[in-house]
Length: 140
Image (tube, rainbow, N blue to C red):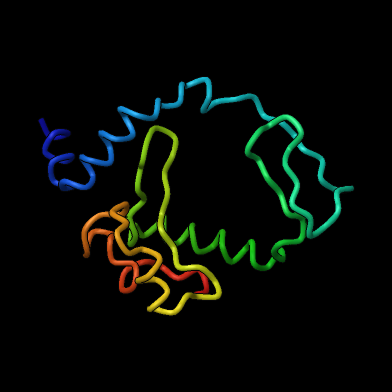
């Protein structure tokens, strides 16, 4: 009963989007989420070139796209956001969670409004749906 109340409390958008994913997009199987570890030696690959893994379709790499310092900043940001639960993670389906973030460098407010116009992915204002006032900034 508590689970039903939790779902209903998320609102119409959440229920509608969940129904869409459940009806039109099959959930990943447990074995899909726990695939065997695959090592990809990228040490000899060129930097600045977009490359797809030779056997894992959809896995892409651009060596040198960010510095080690940038990677550490991103790791620290996610660690702190996850630890204090300030910003919500959105679970779209089993094994697929995401958190909306402003990019770095940040977009102008007018561009954000243009890009998200009509999108109903992240919920109502005050519940993760207000990208201008409530989403964390990657540049911070």
